[in-house]
Image (cartoon, rainbow, N blue to C red; front, top):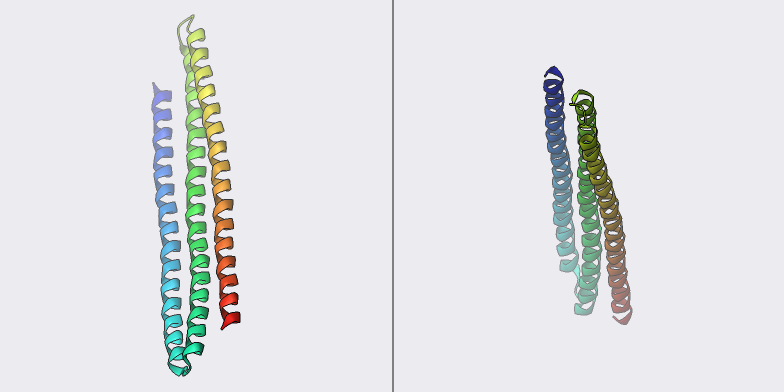
Length: 185
């Protein structure tokens, strides 16, 4: 009876530690996102003030149009850069949650196997076959979870690579378009 209470207490403590870790990850990622947004807002305000001052100084409409195109290109590049930064923050948060989930599942699996070992040692005669069947089932479930986790990680890596490539291609397209517009002006 004492071993069961001790195991339950350990399991409860692990659960509490996981909840605290989830809260910490949530707060850290929220802090990074808020910091990013504040920096973005500050930079946008400064850029808009500078752009308004620069446009007010221009006399020629063609020159103003070229300047507006340049501002648009710069704004798009900054938006792509900021979206990459936000994506990186979200991606890092997701990987931290995934690592925590993997650790938790591993810990639960070890605890269950340990409990089954204790059950097989203290169980009635002839219960070995049932305990071994349970162990086999847990091992198969753990292997399935590991396979699914690896597959999810591969999908996340592929998505990450695709998002970065798409962002880079968009940025390059805008740069090329801005160069063509500036060359024709």
